[in-house]
Image 1 (cartoon, rainbow, N blue to C red):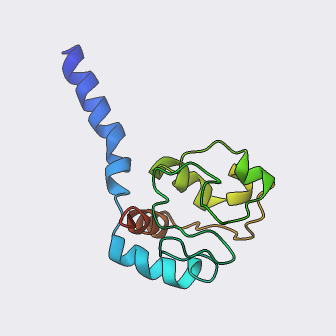
Image 2 (image 1 turned 30 degrees about the vertical axis):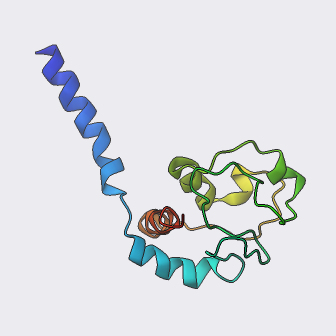
Length: 122
């Protein structure tokens, strides 16, 4: 009985995570409208911000040829989906001292969608 209760509790706890699985096509639209002003999805093409090609699983401050702030260089983050989710809510809170001026994506669905899109860029 205890095992069943524990299993049910774990499954219920995982439901919100499953509900946040994003839609890459919708995320591409979010990217185009909110991110592409400063970031490119193309490998090696930096703009105001670094290229986001291959960002998922990359260490922070590692795009060759991009001049990062000291805060981003020393953040020591790995851009996995959980870290991107936190960062995209409020970049300046996660990397204090970042020069990224973007206020963040407050909508959970849009954020999950853009992360799903970023995961396709490899």
